[in-house]
Amino acid sequence: MTAPARKLLIDPEVLATAPAPECLARHLFFDAAHKAVAIKLMPGEYGISLSGQMLSTVLGSCVSACIRDARLGIGGMNHFMLPDTDSNEVVSVAARYGVFAMETLINHLLKLGARRQHLEAKVFGGGAVLEGMNHINVGDRNAAFALSYLRTERIPITGSDLGNVHPRKVLYFPDTGRVLMKFLKTNPPESLREQERAYKRQLVQAPVSGDIELF
Image 1 (cartoon, rainbow, N blue to C red):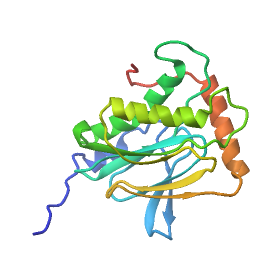
Image 2: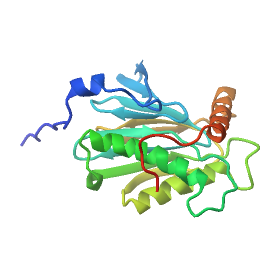
Image 3: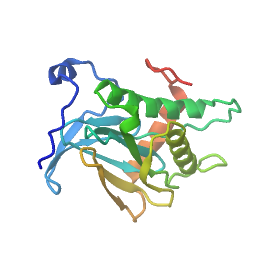
Image 4: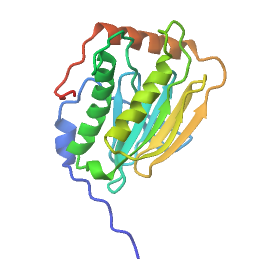
């Protein structure tokens, strides 16, 4: 018996004309190796795949949560880092940035018809690849935050690869939930180091903003 086709609960014309958030990835390319249109994520961005696009990123200290609605086959990926902070508040400045990164992705999926009870996640990154961090390794803190957030929100974690000292390349196919990951076992490219350094400086300078309630 043939499975019924999935129906997206969104009007494509509305999506095409809607203003995109600044942190929504817009860099598309064709990945010849996987014969797929791919969306490339840079630090601080997130991407959404509605019709089979692959999501691609390279992670050093940053973390990516790959989240999808398993019934609809739509999903997305973020790419974020918690800023350094010495805050002792119960909800610290760093946690607010992490919540913003997660809720931005999840809220976009919900607007497209996803349901929280059908979400599942895979988490990658958090390598110890940047020098000059505070007393706690920022990669470890990023990874711990992502896992804690997803468990608190009761979003099942169906796969993860976190920590280590190598950057990772991650390819995500939200329609099936498939992830391809490989370590970049040479020294991290200087371009990746500089991207994460620049992103780290940006986090310190720019306050959290947006139409999302942080808690």
